[in-house]
Length: 523
Image (cartoon, rainbow, N blue to C red; front, side):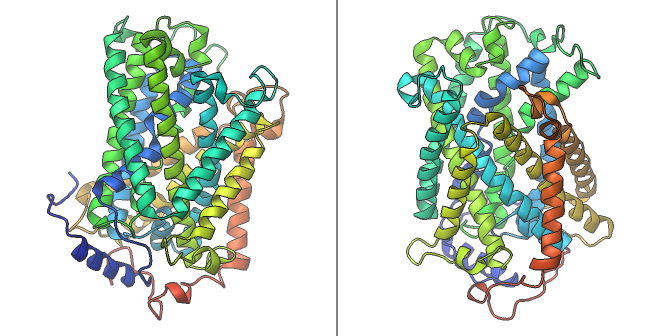
């Protein structure tokens, strides 16, 4: 079992001093404000995953392809992502710094791999922020027609344009909160997560009280998979994307490493707790929703999804209350996504690995946050949103590709880590978190899982990348083409342009930057 020491009392002063010292070992001058406790880091991870956002946004997709049997993709994805999360826990204990994926891949695979992972994760995060913001459109107009500001919802582009308006308002809000300091962000995020967790537990109880059929319903496969090359298995693989699109982002708990108290101990626990809590609550919500829905064959189930189930099974009043909780979940999810992207951009800019790095890494004297980087991420996300106004089909393709890039970025962490293990060069920070002898098999499973799911995500399915007409080959192959261009272009840019500029900026350096510490834990 993972070696995790027992809880001990937290003292902010000593922890800050100890982990600021760990930061200086990596060549960085402490600059971010270290104020966040254990629940704050846990909240950051679970709000990024955001069970209510993900399940309400994607339930219709899974059910429409694989029916009730789609539920089994939830534990499947959890087990795969658990292998990845366990690897991340060891890295979070060893390298308690901002930027998680970027810094982890840099120290295990070298600066080139680190830059590529950070590059892909940064792009994916900005697209993900835009995609999460669009979720307002799936919920707010169902609460009240007042929120359908653009048209009446019946026009060809009414929903898409209104989604951009609502999403823009949300991104402006999250940008302001992130700019005004980590403490404000953490307070709002933690309060939102608390409400989301309570709402999720209550929803589980309410759905369980309205069950109308037995568990055998989730093994029904009849009528699904017809016309698929692999039959029902092919349909199930497609439906599993609904789970894969939700269960990621747990590394956010470690992205706040330079602002957390005792991050080497708290971040690994926060990562695991966020993933496990999300799996349990999300799995129960999906299960009981399938068992409580009035009609498993209702057309609304594959159109309106979980929103339909909640209103139909629990009644209009209770359903509206739940939908308001979903709005809160979407809000803190967007806040957490931007927070994670901001720390990643800051970490790269501090290493002079982004254009105008010194400006993007500059911290506000008052708020101790990189305000310019915060605004840039918000601006780019809003610009991406605009694509959705008249081209919702293209936007759907782009958001799907963003998830793929996150899985690829995770592979750029787990593969170099596995190479270190096979070469005998990896030793965990055993005083905080260690997998011990399980480290190698867990790492191998993490790489195999990540590779298999990446292929599944990239597979050129028309129903994923070109769901509505007209059909275009470049949309269907959009995942492969886009990820290939981003990866090859990024790799080439770093090699010919960026690598000569890389180095910790003077204002963030302790002096003469040390060599990156070897993954086996040497100083």
